[in-house]
Figure: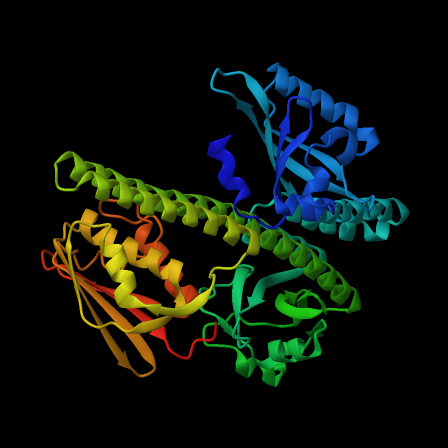
Length: 516
């Protein structure tokens, strides 16, 4: 079970993590699970999962799957089922499970991690309901046959396409076919609000000499539609003054229809149609707005997918981050043992240092548990005596560390110590340094600690990568990325400079005016 314990250290939005004993009783649950169920943790632990937290009509089937897993008769790793909250509502959960075994290989329980996909299912059901409605409309009126088929194709694109671009392509082509437009595009408003970024464009045959990778300025007809936040068309666009807003190389436009893509009532992009054989009409406006809604659904689906991917990456990064720091502590313990074995360190000092380091390890684990529960990146903010802190840290390393009077800084002492430990460890173990020098400078509202070593340094091309998660020339690639996060949490920054075989210089800069 210990290899999965990190799952309970950090709660991720919508991710439930539970462990069940062989009898189906809950032995562990994370805080997100408690929130979704609406119970306190003590109200859940020890209760039978199937009797208390599943709808009655779903218990038998889910219990059978659980029994098959416990008995080893099947290896189902993914399934979906509803759970029952304290207030009687049902939430749909997509589960992944792992069979837990003891040291003898006997199955002792199940670890389940599941995402709450209720809203995703509701969106899917809503789209399926829209599809059913369109199918009914097809039966009632042949006049709307082509419209219904086109909307079905657009809806299917939202459900089946894996990227916003592919969904937009399918939706736009369906809309163009239904309205008889020869050209069209879908674009999204950039963050600055002054430009559109093209998601997909179909010039419809005529050669277009524009660089489609360049943003589209918000001006002319586009600006009018954004301000009105409703669809509009111009059937005499070719003879209007609006053509002056088109860039050189743009295809000729006889007529144009623009419909805003809305999210929460606000325009987030445009669906544009052009060069219809006849004139655009109000039916075309209605159709374009409907397809704009499908683009909105595809956009929401993309955001949901991106969010899931980001949450999974955050969980992976966090577990590696904790593992990295624990390995640092273990490496220091090994160094103490080597010094003791070689007669460099007396037994009393060896035991004393080990006890102090073990206390720090316990504090580190407790801090990570507290961090996971509170969601905060910093603990107690205090005035830190830097000379005293560095003198304490230097006891962990068999190296010369030179410093002047470094004064004090304000921050989380435990996290600052963690940052310095990682820098020193990186300098000694991976840079081969035998000496570290630390100086301080105060200027322009900044306190800067400059940490220099005499190690092997880095090539010029490597220096810009050393703060990236996972990048390393010899270690795990997490030490300096952790330091960067700690500095950002303090409202500061970290910089590095180096030359091959000439050591490295790390600068930690703190903003004096930063409000904690």
